[in-house]
Length: 209
Length: 216
Image (cartoon, rainbow over all chains, first blue to last red; front, top):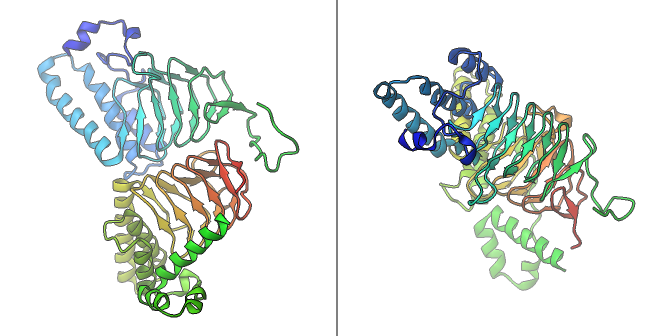
């Protein structure tokens, strides 16, 4: 890709890695990776999440084909499949957003993943957005390992989400999160894990935050 | 007062839902008769004929053949009955048809309403989908809008105890999430984009992430 070549190897200036190389998890072949993704999605051949992820893996794998002419038909196939996943299921998973192993899209619809990197064992649900905070800013989030992201959550900006964190449903997160945190709210607030926030109508006294 | 008005409107809506002609007849009768709302038929869905039930669901969805909500509810009704059909070939055909319809509705509109959900009558799914409705039960006359989520608070595979119960006439706003083994009381209103993690008392209105009660 000419524009990718113009940006060069330094991907810090762009929102996403330029996608000039295969960013699939290292140390595992495409076939084994897809088999693992299939198991992660409950071994359900009708799971849209699995297919969208498979298209993403294929989009990365094709970057290993160095010869431009050989790669061209693969790129056309990838682009068509990527567009199809957006149109049919509403899952937009660009191949240059780096995604670790055992990523799971538990339910599809209105998903956009524009992260710089996502670790292993991350679960997302429908209506999740990961992307830029503002159009003028260029850096997207980095998501750690073993993270659960609830439906409707937005994770935006130049932030890092630490390992083993939980991002609650409909939460808007635009700040760094240390490992093991649970965040909930608009904007995101830290809550004690496993302790569900009380409704103020039932709380003993007024809560100040 | 607002509450009275809204429940009055709901009763009018359910009257209309029952039978257009009867509602019209009531409307044209004397005012005292019009004020007397007919007793709503609340037999469990299981006790009704499939055709009768689907006709009611169709009416609930404004008789729109292109309403995704109607098709999702219809697939659920057929799926519930498919397992009980005695004749084996008919059962297998119905099960296959259900599987195809369920997957198609999930793929095209993103409405995921498994038949394990105990679904009440006249449930209305508004707008164009993206709903994950794995509740334990959903009561009669519940209104659900797009982008809603009912499910376990953690993980993806809930048992009955970790799934929410939505009681009769609850009104669920778009983008709302009801997560975990909680109960949304009858006539409660859950505002748009609200995240409910605790029980909501009957007639309450909640809003926010996490949900807070707001005075009505």
